[in-house]
Image (cartoon, rainbow, N blue to C red; front, side, top):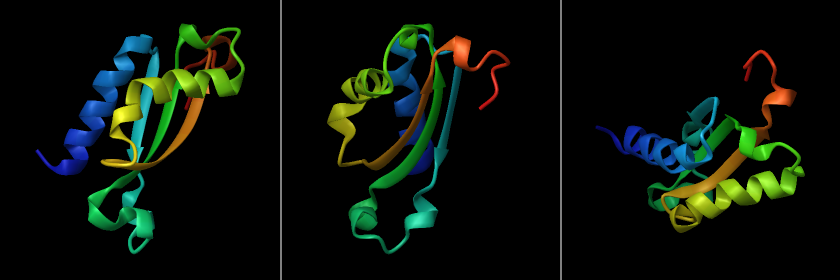
Length: 96
């Protein structure tokens, strides 16, 4: 298993605590090659997550829930994390 696959699996495992109905994780590290934060192998990831746990929460509170589950992975092996965190009512068809 590659580092990228391992990291995505780790992120997926951690975020399972939010019981997501949708969880898409994309490794965008290749777009940041040469970037200072990418040195040492740290990655850039985009996460689209839909969870009932986000219902009624402001975007900042949703992001906080995600970051609380991943905090020990930042800044390495995760250098950057772009989040799209939605409640099911915002994503009724399950579309990313």
